[in-house]
Image (cartoon, rainbow, N blue to C red; front, side, top):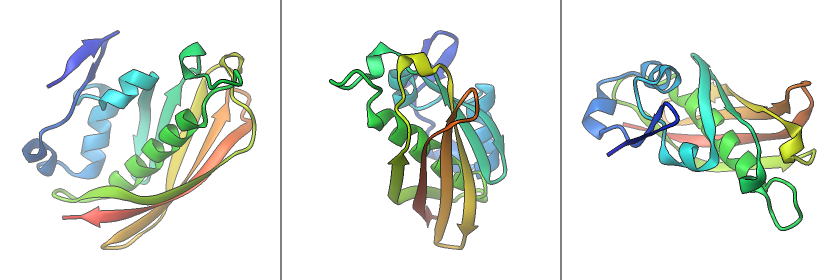
Length: 159
């Protein structure tokens, strides 16, 4: 089931439909809006904006709904953006019938993110992909290109 908010559609893609698409086709559908973004994207206010095989961009604009008790953006926003861009980058390299899931990821938060930071961009790039395991790295930057957070992931490739 999906719902529409501010011109975007959110929900899930049925497994049978997903299996009919290669990973790059699937992620392109998220970018162009022909497929729904996941509901956490609506909750956190992020979008999948660019894709090419092995590389994905996710964007967001931090605001007061993302704050921790200290008044800075909760690290969970950065973690979710990195997990999303890195996992989707790996997915974009997979053939029809294959999917992936995160086995582990590590992030480093190197600069505070606040609502004043403005738009942020998470870029995920595949480092390696085998038949069963893939790795990727991700970087979150602000509009001036300053590094805010970075991470790596290991994903399991599923049939």
